[in-house]
Length: 104
Image (cartoon, rainbow, N blue to C red):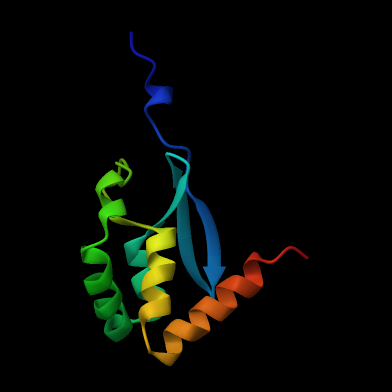
């Protein structure tokens, strides 16, 4: 009998950004975000740009295999892509994320 608990990921953490959920998963020591959640937060126009920037990112090769087959993006690569974007919404998301990540 195999121990399936060692092969499964823990349930993702869920944070909310302007009332929209952002599921975060820890995989191999790196944080990953569900792409669908990110796209719902940043919208279609910025989302297309971010998808294009992330398509060539080599860290996506190690993406977690989740049971519900959701595409995940590595958090560091997503932050790099947002920094490279000139869109005001990208800057706002970065500022808000940094403010929420600071210890109280």
